[in-house]
Amino acid sequence: MNNMEKSELVVARILSILMDTGFTESDLSFDDLGLEPEYEAFFDLSVQWLLDEGIIRAREFVKFVGMTGALNAPVLTAYGLSLLNQPSPVGNKETMGKAVKAVSKEGRSYAGIGDFIGGVLGGFTKSMGSG
Image 1: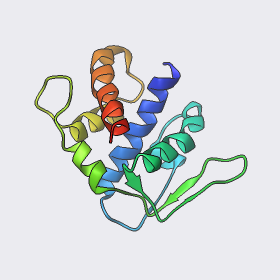
Image 2: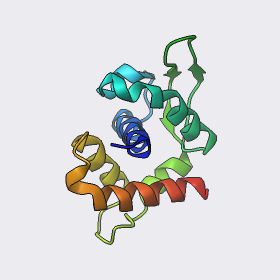
Image 3: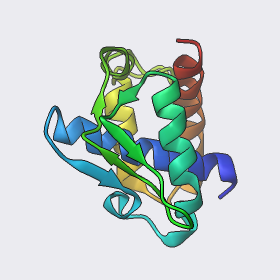
């Protein structure tokens, strides 16, 4: 798996968790993603990117020296929710939210769903960047 695929999986896991938790008082750290340590290097930058793009917001993003950070009270923004409700770019009838959930669940099996990942998360990444 290349670095872009690892980044996409981390982003998918973050978004999937936030879709499940809704507007609740919680924290989010790398350990909550349930991924192997090889993905840890992608957590802080993925979180910062989601924050910078306005997809999520948090009360605070605490960064630790030599460790990954943690989000305090993270939630999807209205913009993030609207992106997740858009149709998937791969031509089927599911929403981006359902596609993100599917990718998050599949974890490391990118090889079998390469076209799906490329279309869904590639399109999702483009749509997030153009907001």
